[in-house]
Image (spheres, helix red, strand yellow):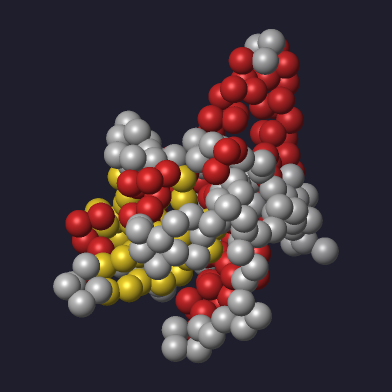
Length: 239
């Protein structure tokens, strides 16, 4: 049974959601658009089937979702990161969750947040999920790419911002975010699963994500083929 403090927190969250729904109804549907935008502008539904296991931007994108390997070895990683990647590997194709819910076409940050919880992050007043399993009741920073960016900007103890020119500082388990149209917001969020270095020193970063179900997709592929002109940013996670 939740503690009295937790019960108060849940009551407060649900009360806020209820008030928000009343506002939506009063606005004649305008609020629905606002809430949908708050969940993050992710890649289009046409990309959903294009999950990838590429090791670089030149490898053709598969037309079907590849099955994950039977065994993924994360033993070389720190225990916290191994737990995060194990969770990501086991759930990257999942479209249902009783505990966290699922946001069709907008589940990328919900999923990334889950992996960070598996890594050992603890909820706070700005980043939390509702135990009811209703994803629309989660904190905005839990489900919105832009809100998550703003949250991390206010919490440097949790992560350090990196640009795509700082790939050499990115680690497995870090968070990658995309701005598809160079508007300043964040349109998609994933978790770094692998980092490869070519003989010429070129760094290739692969990531996993939801909505567009992805495992080991190349960042380069995402910003040159899927969304030409897109920009990648990273958050180096601090344990």
